[in-house]
Length: 406
Image (cartoon, rainbow, N blue to C red; front, top):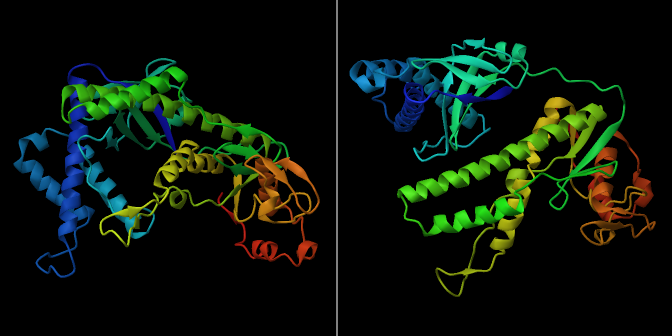
């Protein structure tokens, strides 16, 4: 778990040192990645496989040779090598893709502070000791005992904002005094729908901010790459995006905390968000080499943006941190009647209207799906003999079993 606090470095020397650490961390990471790409099983002139230990020794030799590299912190540079080693570990464990080079133009950059030392100035301000920079102030918005218990930290620059993330043990879950459970359906029109009929929507830009955002994007498309004006426009766009991320992050925290304090457990659909937001596959035109047929790419792009703006993955992740969450198969949850169990595509008249063709039951479609998700996780409500002749219902019953993710 991480506790993120806002950092306010002093102008001049302190700010220059932080920027230098970010540059050195990026350089060491990229050089280490390039060095690892050299090694293959067929290249026998390497005495040993390249890993963190061998690269740390190479870093020591490089610091003796180059004064500009020696001017930085060895802790920061070794932290970049540890990040690279962790990235390869995740890749070989199939938890992430192959590591890529870090660009200087990335809006997000940072470095690790391993030997953590913090002190409290007053009720609202604290200080963290950064190598070569000294004590740097940060704003305290969480309990000081949690910050003081941190084992390491990462200082990050994103769109002109400096922050520090303190690595702490996971917070203990607050167990509510209830046995109530809830089902959660995630959608586009209604980002979060619960089985008790509530709907949650993530915040977005205001009308003025949306107008400003579109105008800045149009200005950016006309400006020359590499110009100072383009950099200023990108900075303004970054500040707007950062404001939107703050709003949505706050919405996720408040919504998940409210659910965790109201229910003892929750059920969500097991949705492959990464697969659902992939771009549409191009369709080559067999009659015209080099040409392509319409593939609905524009509509798919709009759907992908709507899904990503709903923060499905982040919402489920934070909810699992705060309460017990059970993942259930998503198949036919929107077509099954929560009253009698009858399943067919015609049950859902529209995005919001559900009308069962078997018993005539009517409900909001998203709420009906959330009830089905809750029943699959915690209740065995409908038996196969209810609609034994329905092949769609039989295939739903053969869906994958529920799994707990917390």
